[in-house]
Length: 349
Image (cartoon, rainbow, N blue to C red):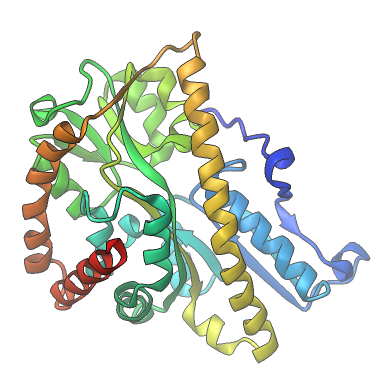
C-alpha cells in the first residue's frame, strides 16, 4: 500500500502543519466570518499541502480570525479530476492544481507538458512563471472561461525519471517502456516521441502499480519520489531535468470576484508572499530527499545523472512536439507558446 510519512521540516522552515487554520474567533468557539476549503493534490509534508497550510495560517492572522481555511490533502475530497470539478462548481473555493489534470478542459495549458521548454536554472524558471504575460494574462483568461482563476504558478522542482528493468539513459531505453503519466494527451505525446508506452493513472494508484509491474516507471520531482516511497519499488532514478513540475494556486472565479475588497486584497498579498516561501520549500525538500534516496541502503536505488550529450538526444525528439501542440491544442496554443518562448529567451539573455 501507499505510505504517507510526512516530512519533519518544521525545524528548517518553521511551517505549521495544521489541517485547519483557525483565527482568534474560531479559537474562542465563534464561527469565522469566512470559511473556505483549500484542496491539494499532495499529502501532509509535501509541497502543495504545506503551501496551503501556510497560506491558511497567514490568512487567519491577517484577517484577525475572520477567515478560516480548511486544508485537504490528496484524497480528502476525491482524486485530482474530482477536485477540479468541485473548484469549478464552487463547492471548494481554493485549490492547488497541476495543469496536466486540466489539459482536456484548457487545452493551451498542456504547454507545461512540453519537455525541455523551461531553463535548467530553476530560479530563472520561477521568475518566468511569476512574470509571464503568456501565463498570467492569456492562459489565465482561458481558465476563467471555466470559472477558475489561476493566481500564481510555481515550480515544485525539476522532474526526474524512475524505472525498473532498465535505467533510462537513451531514447532506445524507452522503446515499449510502460510509463505512468498524468491524464494529459500532450504528456502522452511527449513520451510517445521517445517510443514509450504511456499509461495515465492517478498517483494514488501508482505505488502498487510500480510494485506489481503494471507500469515500469514514472516522473516526478525528487521530493515526491522519496516521500511517496516510489524509490522503494524502483531500481533506478535518472536525473534528467527534462521538465519542471508546475502547479497553480487557483480560486473559483465567481467566489473570488464576490469577495469584499479588503479580503481579496489580503488574498492577493498572501499569494505574493508565498512565491518565495514555496520556492525555498521545494528547494530544501528536493535537496534533502535526494540525499535520503542515495543513502537508503534498505531500498537501494541507483541514481544516474544524464550528461548534456545524453539530454540532447531527448531534446531533439522533444522539439517537434511543440509544433504538434501548436496545431492541436486550442485556437490560441500557437500564440501562447510563441510568446512563452520569447519570454524564456529574453529571461535567459
